[in-house]
Image (cartoon, rainbow, N blue to C red; front, side, top):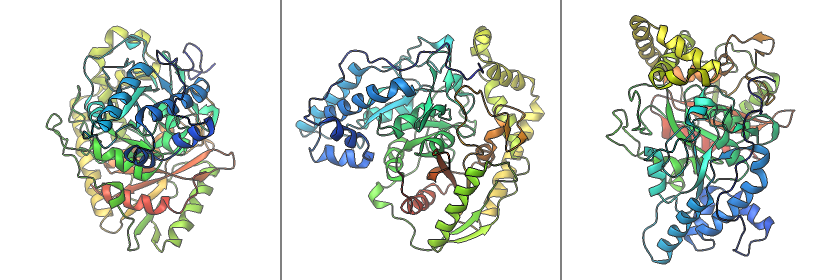
Amino acid sequence: MAEGGTSGGTRGAKTKGTAVKTSSGLVPGTAGELVDQPATVQLAMMRTRQVSARELLEAHLARIEARNPELNAVVGLDADVAMKRAVAVDEAVAGGRLVGPLAGLVTAHKDLIDTADFVTTQGAKPYADHRPTVDSLIVERMKRAGAVAVGKTNVPEFGAGSHTFNPVYGATGNAYDSTRSAGGSSGGAAVALATGMVAVADGSDVGGSLRNPAAWNNVVGFRPSVGVVPSGGAGNAWHPLPIHGPMARTVDDVVLLLAVMARPDTRDPLGRGLKVPAPEHLHPPTQPLRVAWSRDLGGLPMEAEIVTAMDGLRATLENLDWMVVDDEPDFTGTDEVFLTLRAFMYAEKSDELRPHLDDVKATVRGEIERGLALTGPEVSAAFIQLKDLWDRAHRFFQHYDLLVGPVTQVMPFPLDWEYPTEVSGVAMGSYVEWMRSCSRITSFGLPALSLPIGFGSSGLPVGAQLVGRPFGDLDLLLAAKAVESTHDRR
């Protein structure tokens, strides 16, 4: 079996404590309809007392019990913790006290970020029983906003690679075909959203970890500009590649969560934040947009199903009266910059992981070794090139409002693969090369959003990557709302 197989892990999260049952009078079919509603609808039902936080939680726990054993998206589940939070929200509502903008919405946090109430394993054996003493900044903010966390979402080991499997919990199956990959590293989050196990979810992205799983599971994943979502955690706060962002089933739901995540914070030296209006105040653009259309993002190999779906999207954009022109920025140097800075990022973990190197997968060890072999001039050159790429993107977007291209180069591959070794007959040289459709955008530092656009001939979802101008996060979200309104998500 390939490294990505399910052996050695625990399939399905076990419910701890509170039994999964509904006391709300909702029959199973009604409960299903409730958890499948957008987060904005669930929130409106909470605020108008049509449903309580406890009822929302019970409905989501029922869905987790029904779907999670097969898919393995939610891990470290603790229903007791979740119920205490839901009851606290209901008591605040009953007492007329202020409740946060996410009050009662069910979530689960990515298993790469610290949570004081849930184990944080990073999908790695050395941390299988690790329980942090404090929450990460994102978790802290979502908790204060009233979100009800049930546990964590599954990830690849240390978040390495865009395929979710690890030796602690096993592999996560795609929401539309459990024998296929969910993508990663936010694979558990995407599947939990797609199947109604949670209403909103946090994710993170270096080379596509928000965008790839969103595309493969028919949800929305947003990688904001650097500094929009402060991190405030340990590690190199100046590194530009790792970005936290929201995931949800609709663009409005992404905006709802982004407004909570994106406040500035002085604990992050780059955490400038962003003032995000409420979803109802974000209206699609009224003027035609200028769209640069790239079918293959610099000549990358693409599977036919993705090309066909993208061709259909182009017709949609033209029907919106947007000006669509075949064009793309110069991608020269993007791959080299990404690989260097990614290895540099892993080298920073070398002291932490040195005692455990025999217990981590070969691809992580390889990243650390490459990072430690880098010279100071090589790292410096990558950062200088990063600024050159930013300048190049700035000039390019003087002519366009939006760049549109594919999110992924391949459709979801079999669960027991580690990664695709070729794409459309072109050999892949590493476990990240097949993700260049995302990592090339990362190197430019631009905001990017994965938006569902339909299904391939295999019946699996396809996503489009919408890329905004430098710091054009809100304009990008507006454009995404316009495109989303033209597509049937079923």
